[in-house]
Length: 284
Image (cartoon, rainbow, N blue to C red; front, side, top):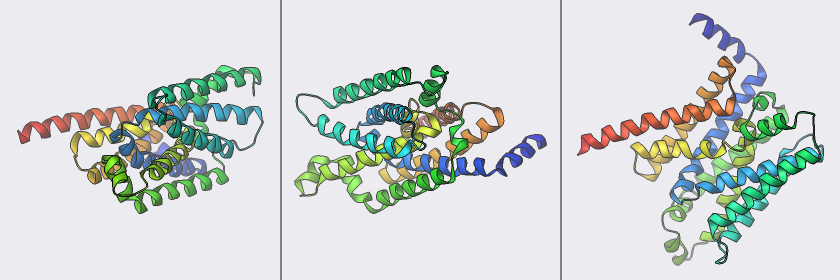
């Protein structure tokens, strides 16, 4: 046990590990805040669809040999979030069909581009790294850290300032429209913020595991708590705890960062489910 703490203390002294923990914690916090809204509005698969869009955008940035692929990936993902919201409102193309179209199309285009214009000799490794995450969270530059911190602060401020609007749109969008409030605008802003979170989380868990980062903390909190505020606060705490524990475990055990975080989320979800059943049984 002493050796374990000594090893952990040594790793924590490195700046790149500190950067990873800071960015990972902020990403987990942002993901959990809007994750509750996504689950309650039954928009869970939007995160999955946009994560595939981010994969395609990152492939385009790789082909263009950009030193920093985040700005282009962010731009394309945000535009697709807006397109997805608009298309989902089309009576001829239902929301789930629009998500499937954009999701599958982006994956296909991304893999095709990476195959035609390989950035290295190990295409399979590059694809696997992008889809499932890697140690890229441990190789963040100071500029990427500051960009992630700035975007994360913007997401948190948006949620705090527009909490009442988000609450109204989440539970009764029709009533919100009837009272003259711009529900469509708030839905659009939420979609854009989700796109930002997706891009931020790419380095942490990979495009295929982002949905788990967004959804699991919210579902865990809902097993025990019932009000929107309590669920949101609990989801934020759970998400940050799982992210920190998962990152530290992956560093010590040399396991994939993204997969370790998601497995931690799954374990916590199971624990909260058991607590919820016990709590429910005690009430009855």
